[in-house]
Image (cartoon, rainbow, N blue to C red; front, side, top):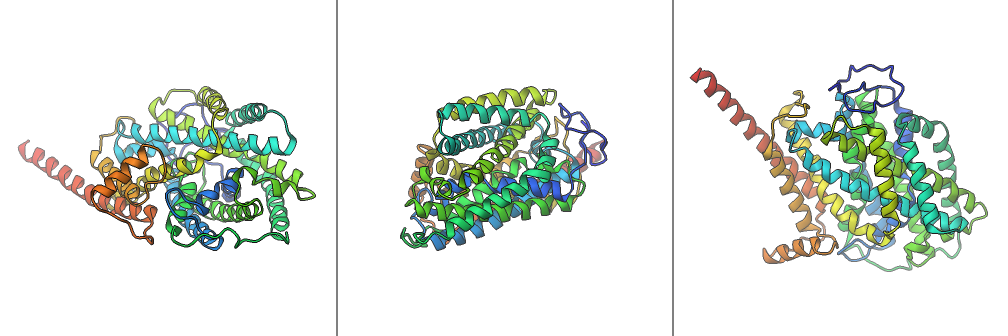
Length: 454
């Protein structure tokens, strides 16, 4: 499979299968515009409720929610930047990189989980597009869902062309629209950011929610950064581009929610009240398809780790159709619960990768399809996931109840200052480093013994 950084650069688009050439054509502006657009999301305007009123924790004051947003986004976007670096260095997509971490067969586990979470994200994006479109122009919700699904699917057929379009046209229009809406919302005399009450008690749970929104991009970052000309550019573009715009988006969302007494379903109403609010919201609604595009495209690439010869274009058509159907039966109320599970899976996954890299220190990973299995790294990942859930079980039915019951059974009550994301990341990194060193010693001892016997 051709995944090296020296792959041909003349290919105008991503190859249909994993064994095709890897064009290295994306500079800082291309990637920065892409990540900046991903940071601005209609889902974020309403989804900031997950920070303001985190699942399973007390609601925050608006000030606490703003600080949690900034802290969580800085941490989460830095994690995304770190996850973008290996793809730029190797030319391999995210799930293929996990062959070097877990082994060829065991990498299927996170690949399947990633497919599930990306389908979930893509579905929620279509839901919020339909919500905004219906509010702005009216019409049946299913028409908006269907239209957004069709546009999303078409964009995935030429992914690098989509990124160049974002840089040249869309980013400027989005910046103008967000700036205008922010000015309008914060200039309203009736805006009272302190009216909602709340406390700082759930600060770290809110921070974890902000981190979770960002880190949901960890398992897809290398799908795009693999086309970066430089490793440093991939890190900087993701960290800075995404971080700034997610903070802005969440803060604007907090202002809009304050004007509608925290009603997430009515978050777009204050925006439409602006003289040019309809135009601004339509720009953001049309642009939102870049979110669903990224999810559908990376779902297809993740599936290719399981079936390398599958045609990405065919997969995108199937996945785009699936999320369109799912979006007809999902509501935005399921969003916060979804985030709590996402963070617990992918934050420790990055920690395992960092811990292994500290031991490997630049050694080339085995990215072949049947790379040797590394079960100890899966153990480190599971331990990190368990730590996250014990600190912040979230509010998912059955799943969260089971973790809460386990926490009660062992008598563990996490202090309010403890972040599930940070603790699980540190624990997963430390455990992975220890187990990777043990794995290396065991392999060395086995090799030495075989040589002696020979």
